[in-house]
Image (cartoon, rainbow, N blue to C red; front, side, top):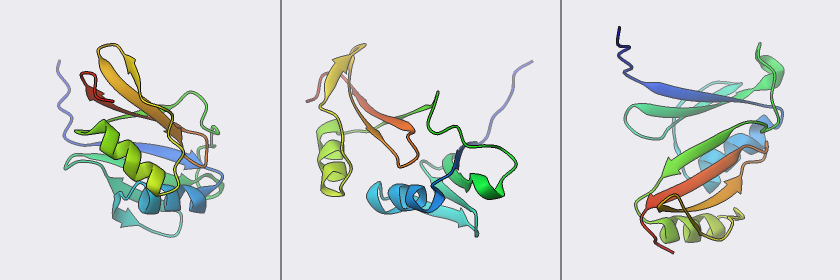
Amino acid sequence: MELKIQRTNTILYCRHWQPAVRFYRDQLGLAVSFENEWFVEFALTEDSFLSVADAGRATIAAVGGQGITLTLKVPDLEEARRQLAQQGVEPTPIRHRWGSSVFYCYDPEGHRLEFWSSGNSG
């Protein structure tokens, strides 16, 4: 049997929901594809989404960023890092790992975001 997945959505349950929404919307500049009073969905690509839910209104508890890394491939790692720093995000220095270049930052809930690109830019 082969599962045929047409769309992905990762949902982060957050205690600090409004700061998390502002982080993804305003600092990362992600486009909102759906929102209501306790849930915001952001489009990452045509078929991939990231949502932020208010843990106080959801049936699943927040994990405080534990055990989660969101990995996001970007075409220009140095430019992505520069843009995020300009928006007040505190990215780590660019490192070279596993044949790629990476940097990290954290959202207000403590979830780790890994930005990477192929090769050794940086």
